[in-house]
Amino acid sequence: EVQLVESGGGLVQPGRSLRLSCAASGFTFDDYAMHWVRQAPGKGLEWVSGISWNSGSIGYADSVKGRFTISRDNAKNSLYLQMNSLRAEDTALYYCANGLRPFRPADAFDIWGQGTMVTVSS
Amino acid sequence: SYVLTQPPSVSVAPGQTARITCGGNNIGSKSVHWYQQKPGQAPVLVVYDDSDRPSGIPERFSGSNSGNTATLTISRVEAGDEADYYCQVWDSSSDLFGGGTKLTVL
Image (cartoon, each protein chain N blue to C red):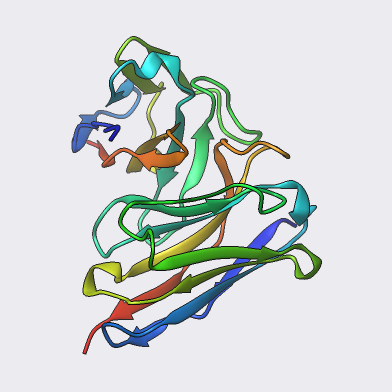
């Protein structure tokens, strides 16, 4: 069964850091692009960041550029999001998702995890 | 930056056809993907590349894309189709979502 499980969320003060993880199973992880998508409470989906299968191509939303860093460890079937200088507006449920087809940098998002909640508040 | 515009809400009676639009400048030149999200659940891909369906998605879900508007069409709407729907495109090395449309089944 294809599965993505996020972890690492929690309550953090403004200006602090947090690292999210996404553990993948059930598919050939290193063949697929991976993404982080967030959803603030009661709001819509917002793409945060994406990384190609070999980490050769990385992109960020303008809202997080310079503060967040995406990475992956294909040996561990894991995706990460390092979030620095957190703001109240970063409060959201963070999902990881994989690309639909292998070796495609731009693609639909196939499987989504259940998300990990990040709350930025003093 | 590129903007995707969706109507906030669409209402339809059971058995009728729902059409949810996604507007963007020359969106017909891009591949559009659609997601369904029910309350408390993660999104589910229902249409990709404008009009293709992932395995397991009913044929009632279809899509089209031309000019400045992409459309998700749900035929023979059922109560279980009530959800939020989001369109998505890739533009200038970034992925973008529309604001979402709440489909209400009357």
